Amino acid sequence: MSANMVAVLYLASALLFIFALRGLSHPESSRLGNIFGIIGMIIAIITTLMFKSVLSYVEIGAAIIIGGAIGTFIALRIEMTALPQLVAAFHSLVGIAAVFVAAAAFYDPASFGIGNIGSIGTSSLIEMSIGTFIGAITFSGSVLAFGKLQGTVSGKPIVFKFQHTINALILIGIVGLIIMFVLDQSPTIFWTIVAVSIILGFLVVIPIGGADMPVVVSMLNSYSGWAACGIGFTLSNNLLIITGALVGASGAILSYIMSKGMNRSIISVVLGGFGGEQAVNSTSDNSDKIVKQGNAEDAAYIMKNADSVIIVPGYGMAVAQAQHALREMGDILKKAGINVRYAIHPVAGRMPGHMNVLLAEANVPYEEVLELDEINHDFPMTEVSFVIGANDVTNPAAKTDETSPIYGMPILDVEKSQTVLFIKRSMATGYSGVDNELFYRDNTTMLFGDAKKMCEDIVKSLN
Amino acid sequence: MEAHSSEIFVIGLTVFFLACIIGYYVVWSVTPALHSPLMGVTNAISSVIIVGAILAAGPLGHETSKIFGIIGVVLASINIFGGFIVTYRMLSMFKKKPKKEKKA
Image (cartoon, rainbow over all chains, first blue to last red; front, side):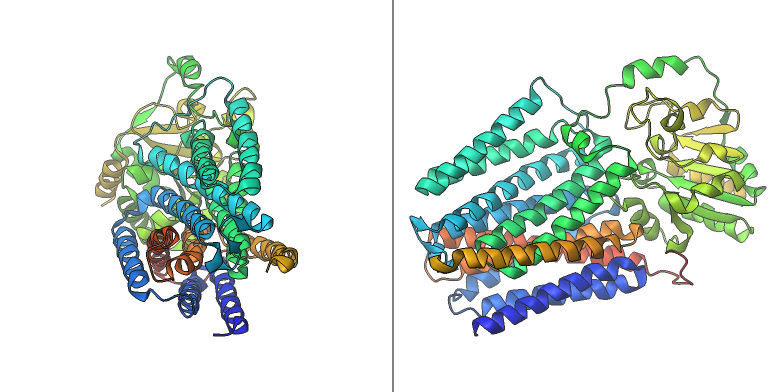
């Protein structure tokens, strides 16, 4: 195949990837977009297999089958609640694959047309080491994010002295290593860059708390794209550069949206330490205040007599697997002529759009699921807000209490509705460790118990 | 090759910045409800680095680089299949009861 033919096919594949993302502008066009993405990938792989230098079809075929089988198995088995972990795990694979490709290019530069061992061009060496560096950080950062999301590692931020100084020194060290690598092209230095970058990746994610996980997952998404870009520059491959840039931009925008949803700058998220610290001092303040408590029958009665109900789901709903029972409840209310809608905060769940997927899984029509700015002005006209598994995203302290760690965060104005029903396991604070004054308001009724059980009981009472 | 390396780099840089701009506009047009599938699909397509892994795995023989290439192909394949399938699963959930569209 001629070089031009290859370039044209790679271009086709890059365009199909752009259409794949473009399709996601609407649920109805999204599935076609996904198919475009798959076709683009098939074109890219087949084109590469046609290269004259590619001869070991058996090994490559076996590798694709093994990897494909593992990926298929995992993707078919995964629970939608565990999506954030899965995505983090996948990011780590992109990162480590980038490291392996860079290593392969370093050990056999001739196959990639970037020189010979010991005499690789300077620009290729720089690009290679940057790709390796980003790939290795993506790898270890994602592994740790996976652990935090999965619960194998504590979600609490781990903060220690001189953290930022240490990270900065390591970064300078890596720059030094890259310069040395360019000068003497030694494998030892290459692997040192890999090792130190892996350590840096861990250190970057360690201080970031559970509440900031949506930002971290998006950020790692972005890194995985930049890693692909770095490899693209190393191999002078436009397809990799374009795709990497698309993914990098996507992750960066998602990180921006997420951190805006928490009123935090990306810098402060990266510097970390959010969540957990305030837990001790703020819980004691409200311990003597009175909380109005209700049961499933009360909730059913209140909602049956309302005209409109807005359901505010949070991560707790996902943990309790309550989405199906919740949808059943919503259906009964709708049949009774009540206007039922769902309000999603940008950072509800542990990754961007997580709640939307869980509700869609439970067959909630997507047009009933609204974003914060679409529905927030409707709360004053709403009789019942039904908060299930959410906490921080409804906390009025974000608007009133300047000392609160969540001050300034956009929240869903549930307190403006006539009645707030709040399903919670206990009076424990949310992920940010901040107490919620909403619990003590007169128009709030707390429904203590497991979210799923509570929804099922409400359904029973409604019938 | 070496003589043209700076030229190739500049072409790459041009492509890079134009792609970033395309990415910027395309991603902002994604509806927030589909941000999870967006992550799924970007995950899958970023594994296009399989292209590099295949080139490394291509030659006959048992060079170190070939072993790295094979490992790269396996890892990237996990992601490609996993990413597209999990995105497919997510998106098929969004097709139930496709009534009139309401969202912007």
